[in-house]
Length: 74
Image: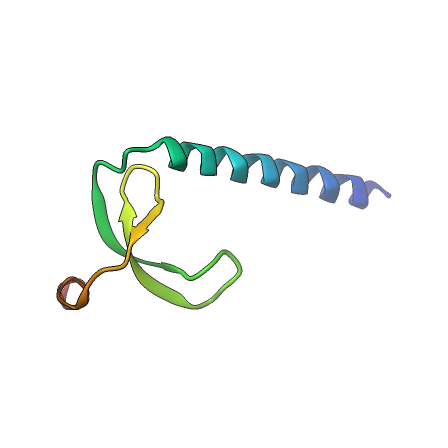
């Protein structure tokens, strides 16, 4: 029973934190961006290359072929 309560509490905290992150990302003006390799989604082991806001870590775009090649050369 203790484990169920702890798991429920942790999942609730996770939901609250995720919502707070989304709210902060929504308010961010994304002043600085960088190309970065990130997980396709939270539970995935697949990585993709995207433009990311360096302040809030929000995905803000997909690099074009030239930008992608520049990133891969680094």
